[in-house]
Length: 74
Image 1 (cartoon, rainbow, N blue to C red):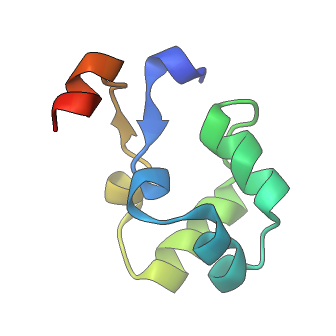
Image 2 (cartoon, helix red, strand yellow; image 1 turned 90 degrees about the horizontal axis):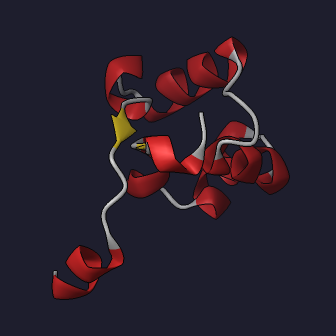
């Protein structure tokens, strides 16, 4: 995955600082997954789903990136 394909919904719903605290994963790892530099591991996905009590299909859904013009209009 690269940034132009979208971003996982989990990183739009939760701040990396919070995710690091509740999952025990480093902010560095979370940043690499969020930016698409590294795919999320199955263990990471499982920990997130269990800890946040949300299904994988929801947390790890890819969201299309929005053009900057649309973001500033919201």
